[in-house]
Image (cartoon, rainbow, N blue to C red):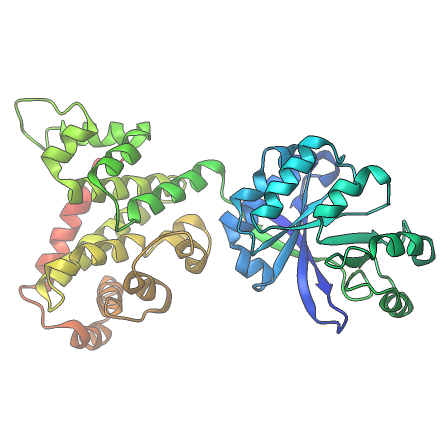
Length: 405
């Protein structure tokens, strides 16, 4: 589903972009008025931090994000880096003891707190003491009417003021005289709509699982835990090991038992294969098979070349992950930002660079029978022991041996 958010720049006194406010827009077909504030913010956070990547959305600027009372009480902001978000407390959030307690914790954790659409009331004093930025809506509260409030708050030396809905050049000049630090409004730029290819919850969970299985610092116990908590993966592993493909007298009944039989490396690899197949359930089955052929062929080439056995596991992942962008309908850059992979693997997948890139390039050229390009790629990592055709047939046999459906 195509999903939309908007961002509007927040400028400093020199009209340089200081930050962006991120605004919920939602699916094109759904009216945003029908979405609650809680849902709007959680959807916004999911799409910016998990689906698309906050740095791409924000150009490495800090982002103002609205938080409702319910989300503050659940301490949702603590799940996101304090260097990347400003917590914008909505105007209808009361300064009650629970909210003050949460905001004090957020302040102690290094978060920047802004009060949105501010209209002064004495009950807000405890919240004002914790705030870093106060936003004034210049349409709702024109400049002349807020002068007494600005004087009252000027005793707080660290407090900065943001003029919102600055519509004209004159309003900007007037707000400068009123000692505002930041400015936002149509005079500078209307909110810029951005389209995001949203992953559904199942795909998001699978990518997170893929990230866990891709870690290089996992322990056997954590591998068992990761696999065991996903019923589909556990079932497919046990079904595979108890199939006619393996002949044994005693049935394998647990993931822990599977590690004993397969070994940690092979069990992790099989789990990766299953996750990839689950990710691509809506794609042609041939896409999954091609990824598996690539994985095995890259591994066999590594073993037979100067890279050797120690690097073969990395090359297996390079081949297996090389079609993830097609499977998820998103850019490889966005996918790799979520996966804790070694730099050599990322370089090969993202930039066709580094020590692993020639093998992946050779594999792609070999699939298309582009002889001259194969020769050039082979020069960079060869020579290779054994017949290339036999290795490719072995990779095809490997893909056919896996009952992943």
